[in-house]
Length: 455
Image 1 (cartoon, rainbow, N blue to C red):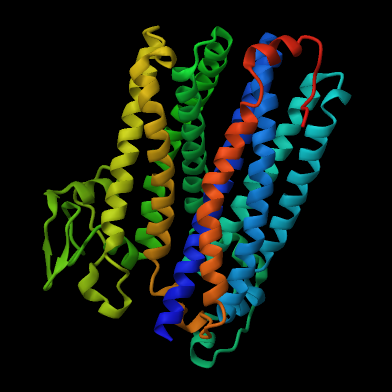
Image 2 (image 1 turned 180 degrees about the vertical axis):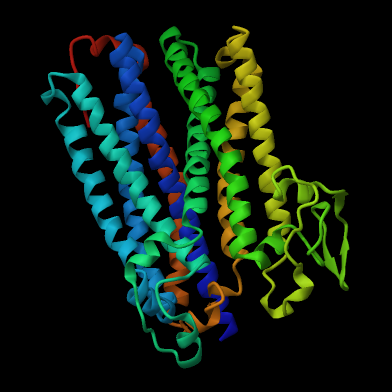
């Protein structure tokens, strides 16, 4: 049974990890697309017009594949964790129901946006459609985060009665829309997701800029890099601020998870040091870099005498999450700082009129930090989900209690993992081919007399 539960965990983790990448690209692409179209209209710039049309094709690809993977993920949730989903169906289905409306909004306005490009005499009206598409895309993500927040801080039913009798009573299905940790979680997830996808898009533009020899192509990709960099600067600030808010939410609602990611063995004291990397062995913290007082200073928003929650030793060891979350959390923070420093250097060069978007070394680093941003975003999700272990519903249901215990999904599950392993590189490769199907100079000249997205 333990093996099957572990397999269920790994299969769903892999599936949702792939789905998150696809959704990240959808959310980020629609924002970059919207900015490019506005700039094309505002400045009558043929390069931004072309960028919007090409990104519309890319968005459609990620939207289609992401939708399909989302359906698979929903089916896996029911099949792999049936007892868990029985509780969700009784208590927390409203976010799933609302997601359907967000999906309909995204789909309807995307169809109008793509296939009726020429029907709008006022181009601003056509551009406004991107807001509805973006609202649908972000709405779908937000409603799924609602479910995740409910798993972290469950509400909407009588938990003591459920724990003692297994009966679900006193249900308030709308309570799951406002789980205690939702606001802090969504405030961090949205800018973090937008940052990851936009940095990856900007990294691709920078890579193509370095490889291009044609003046039109270099101008085209330089303008794309400028959009991606400007948006990323905004996102990284929001990500840093919201990360602090989410840490505060962990202290309030999930102190055990907080102690695990901070590697607090004792805790419960002021002037708590920050432990970087390291682990716990034989009841002691080993291999950690210690910075005195820093954890209390950060957790207390500048108050070094802030008393952090009691540490791991105050909880049964069988309820500790895997302590690898501490290392992953430190990597997430480290990479986030490096991304911020890169974007700060970009901004300083921009302010000094040094043109960082055409600087060779800044262009070389952009793809690297794009990949790092995507890793950091996935890393954050792993910290959140693994940090809740061994619970699937925090302090209510263990993972093994909600999991499927039959072997029926092992074969299909392995096949799905292989399929997903191929899906991501193929999706990005196909999107790149579609984006660069024609020469920029040729399409720019044709755009003088034609409009619309030609598939």
